[in-house]
Length: 571
Image (cartoon, rainbow, N blue to C red):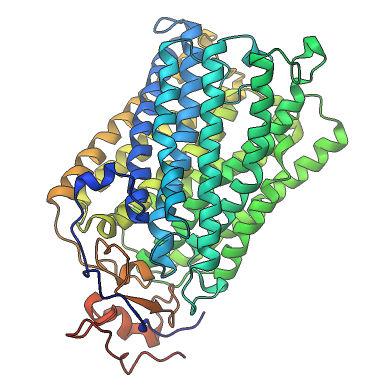
C-alpha cells in the first residue's frame, strides 16, 4: 500500500461544529446518524445477550444433574430453542451490524451510510421483533430448536412456532436491508483516494459478510414461508405424511445457516485485522491474502451446507464432495490466523484489554476450527453426530468467535465511541473471568461428545454427571464475568478519563476525527496517502510520534481548511 500521510481535501462543511455533545435521549429516537444507529444495535444486542445468557445458565443448571429436577423436559426444549435463536439472530448478527454501522463510514471517509433512512428501518425492525419472540415464551413457546426441523416443528407448539417463524423472517429482512446498505456504502461512498485494495480489512470483512447475507438469507426466508404453510394451512411441503420431504427443508435451512456462521464470524475476523496491528505496532502481514481470504470464505461458505446432513441419507459421492469443500474452507481461515500471528511476531505488543481479548479470540477459534476440520471428515462426523462434541465445536466457533470479537471491538473503539477511556484493570479482570469460564464450560464437552452424550436432552446417563457438573460451574463463572464489564462500561462512559482523539496512535481514518465524532464525521473529507497499517515503518516514525491534533485535518480561523503540511506527500 502507498505510504504517506493523511491530509485535508478541499471539501469542507462549515455548518456543523467540530464535536457535539450527544444526549442520552438521542439513542431512543429514529435517528439516521450511522453512529447513533451503531450504538443502538450494540446496546440492544447486548440486552438480548443478557436474556440469552440467562436462558443458557438455566439450561446448564438443569444439566448439572442427570435428572430433570430444575425444569421439565418440555420447558427445557423451549429454553434451548429461545436461547439459540436469541443468541444468533438478536445478539451476534446485530452486534456485527452495529460495529459496521458505526465504523464503515468513518473508515472510508464518508459522512454517513448510503441509505440513512433504510439504515434506521433495518435497526428498528429488531427491538419489537425480539420482544415478540420472547413474548412467545409466556404462551406456547417453540420447542424445535433454532433449526426448527420438521416434522417436529409442525406438530408441536403451533402458536410459538408461528411466532418463531415470523420473528426470524423479520430479522432476516433486517439483515438483508443492512447488507444492501453496507455494499452500496462501500462501493459508492469511499473517498476518491481510497481504492478497493486500500480499504481497511474490516471493510473487506463486511463486504464479504454482506454478500453472504444478501445471497443466502432469501433462501431461508423461502424455507420458512413454506414451513409456515405446513404449520398453519396444512400443506405438506415438508410433512412426510402428505408426501413432503423434511430433508428438503434441511437443505434449504443449511444453505443459509452454514454461511450464517460466517455472517456471524467474518465481521470479527475484520476486527482482529484492525486491532492486532495497532496494538502490535506492526504492519499487517499479508494484507491482500487476508482481504481476498474473506471473499474466498464467502464463496466456499455457500457450497458446504450438506456437511450438516451426512447422516440424513446423503449419497456417498455427495458426502465426499462436501467433505472436501468443507476441509478446503480451513485454508482461507488459516491464512487469516497465520497473518495475525505473523503480525504479532516480533511486535511491540501492548498487553491491554483489546489485545488480550484478541488473543483469546485467536486461541478459542483455533480450537473450534480444528474440531471443525475433524467434523468435516465423514466417518468422524457420523461417529459424533448430535453429541456434545458438536455442541463444543459450535460454541468455540460461534460463541467464542463472536463474544471475544465483540469484547475486543468494544475495548478498542470505546474511546472513539464515548470520548472516554475504559478502566483497564477491570478490563483485565473481565478477560480472565471470561476466558477461564468459557474454557471450563465448553472444553470438557469435547470429552462428553466422544463418550457419546447426546445433545438437546434434559436427562442423561449418570456416567456423564461429573463432567456436566464442571461445565455448569464454568457457565456460572462465565455469567459472573459479565458483571465487571457492565459496571466498567457504564462507569467509564459516564465518569471515565477523557480520551484523546487517537489514544492508540492508530492510522485509520476513524482515529483522525474527534472522539466521539461530530455528526457528519469529518470537518473536511480526508485523503488517503498513507497505508492504514504502516506501523513501525522507519519513514513513518514522525507520523506515529505526532499528536492526533497535529495529524488530523487543520482548520483555519475562518473555519476553512489550511494547506497540507509539507511532509505529507505521497511516496
